Length: 346
Image (tube, rainbow, N blue to C red; front, side, top):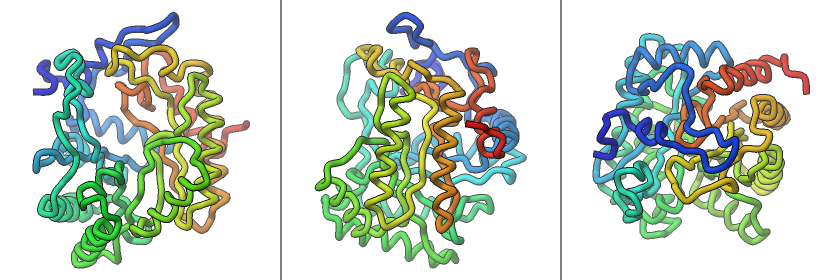
């Protein structure tokens, strides 16, 4: 059992410890240590999100050892929430390997061996396709673009590894996925490449990236976090805008901007310190300024769906969450509301 105390990652979050003066650890949720698989909790979250201008939840979705992992947040929490019709959702397949001490360093200490490998075989890929179509895509509030269910993939490298590292075979697998989606009555599938952050690319790397997106038939590119991590949130934001500008210039598909609340995953990593944490100027006000810039980008691309992703709703263990905490209260949610309603003045 990953978390013997039975409270999921709260077990790790509660044990977060400050690594430098002024370091906000452990993170303290204003509403207490709520479980995301409790429909009553999620009902409250949905009302809060909608009130502040958030209208889509993107759920991390996992498949390891020939079976699903952590599905209860979506199946038992969100889909059983009585008010879930207010909120759309879509899936990001979080197909990354998991080292033993990644999700619980207190249990596994310095054991960095791989607990679960994210590579799947062809049979499991077909099971995944069938599962997400029938269990999620057919939900009336599943998020679609032009009628096409959106399916985001976190690690393209792991996806390709599942098909021998070959782009052609990977494209064939994704084409199979599309055909199954069409058989289910949808016009097509919108497959989203999730870049996961990153940094500015060399000209050669940028060209390879763009070619790979096109070669495998992706419909859009999004990001898990902004990329360009820096101790200073303002520099972090400036780096992210440069990355966005570069990607916008090379892609032939829509790029959906991402804004991160911050970054601090020190509860997972005892060796990390100040240089690994976004801590200077990391405030709701700074976040609002970056969200405003992302909205300007979205508004300047009227030909594509208006979609901005925010990292994140409740990634407490990564120091990136909109939910209220003891330090900023509802500050980040208020920032979203002001920017998205047009009330924000830069």
